[in-house]
Image (tube, rainbow, N blue to C red):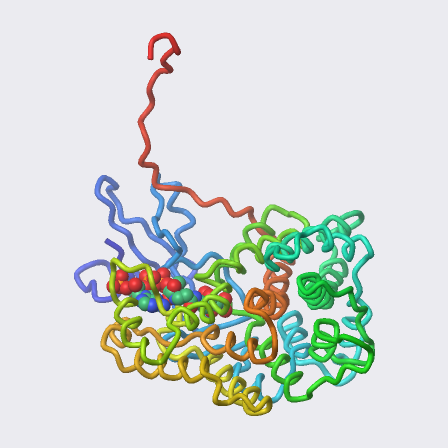
Length: 446
Ligand code: SDX
């Protein structure tokens, strides 16, 4: 039983340690005295009990899926799941999406402050300068089959960046860490465009220095020739989509980057590990899964039946783009994403898109259904992003590549935050339930 020292009037009132730290007391059968554990206080959100000393008492905690576990401390992003709040270095995502842009948000995630006009110009020029990739990487993408999944290609190409950026890289040097962050932010859209064009059988298109981040992504991805016209509404929507995916505290892929990075590995390879984790349909792959789900539902008439399937424990069907480990309220990104979706579809004259109509009907039914209300299941960022990206002309299998491009600044900001201070290799323990020790049986006796 854990006691945080409150409401235990009949016990000693010593609820603080010698240094004034608040204490939790853990009473364990067989251990004669309560184990006193420091309670650490956040600037926002839940307090945490520091259980690091428990192993000295011969006991571990058990938390598959890390539902109740804070794996690190961080200053980058704060999420309040009950309130539906998302802050990047204290700034609400709604204000950033409305007034900022993706590269400024990258700067904020990396440096903790909004840049001055000069700082922003220098950062944008650095990213523009670093956009290119070597001929080796351009040639590498050609080795994949036409139908190879883009997320597998992105994982491989980012691993290739690790191979090309290892000699002389010293992650104990801040200048090397920042250069790595700038290069990854700059090159990810180039890798994404390269991956897409390979699938379309089109040649690599070198980045253009006269275009901003989102415009250049659209140009290097879709341009058939030099006079490709970039639609400013679509470019603005792409920039906002990158922003909405930029960071999300300790999600599965960011935690993967931190765990990989904790071994001191090459940071590009830690990001490749994050890409691999993001690919899963329960995580970043959900935007692709939303479109596949809507295609499976097929018509507004079938929605009720599919909502029933989603509620059936024996049926693996779930409403993709719904639910979240942390948000038990509307994902604030989903609201901005929905608005962006409407803007893009209106600009393209497809605001009667049947997929959008089906998604809106599905959202309405689910939000009014007791099963979803009781479990506090709301649309997340992936619910509307897929419809928007499809309208822009991005094929479904590329959706998580867009998420990858958006999330790169978050991943590398968390890696840089971790390795800029003293850190320990991540090494979880386990609850062992296997066989107890037994002697080997020679083959002729089995
Ligand atoms: C992202 O972590 C992040 O921050 C991730 C992310 C980011 O920016 O990095 O926000 C991006 O990954 C968003 C989530 C995208 N995934 C999906 O949309 C896939 C569909 N969602 C579910 O798979 C699920 O909601 C998760 C994986 C997102 C969260 O799962 P949890 O927290 O482990 O919750 P759970 O599976 O224990 O579900 C709790 C209950 C269960 O029912 P009971 O057993 O209590 O009866 O809710 C049900 C679940 O069956 N449930 C759903 C559901 N999601 C949860 N039922 C139907 N449809 C769903 N989508």
